[in-house]
Length: 175
Ligand SMILES: [Zn+2]
Ligand SMILES: [Zn+2]
Image 1 (cartoon, rainbow, N blue to C red):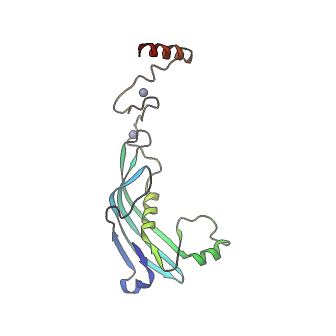
Image 2: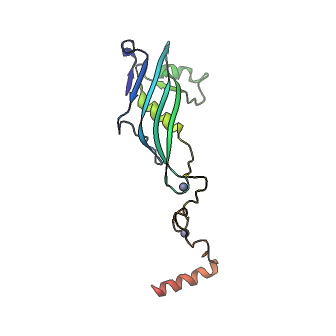
Image 3: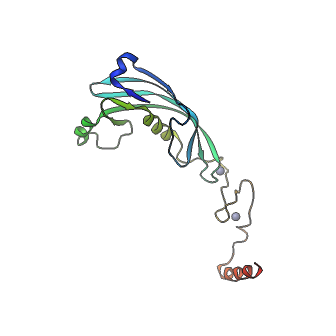
């Protein structure tokens, strides 16, 4: 959804949008939406700057950092982003806006891409590392077994490297 600023006078300063499935894609390898976002907010303008404030609610799932099982993450996040027209931004870049500021975005002066805002804010709200549980044992780095569900012998079988060659030769004979 795009917000066209010249239509704002007719539509008022508040906005609400309930996303349809597939309307927004997180485009992130380890995170997916499970409930489409709902965004509500208000727009205020000061000169060329446009400020969007509001909240987003959605549900997502991310992969457990250790075992890759999906972990449900409710997303309830608030945003307060100021949009500056590209031209103004370039002009002031040398001055105070040099450092990266997550609450600042640029736009073409006419329309604001709400989808991009929602996508960014949802990603920001997701945990950088998620675990299915504090006690998650993860996957065995050797055989890939999920250690939460099964055990494997990889650890006890850890072999003295001097014997590894012999054992391999033995296995080849058997096969
Ligand atoms: Zn896990
Ligand atoms: Zn193993």
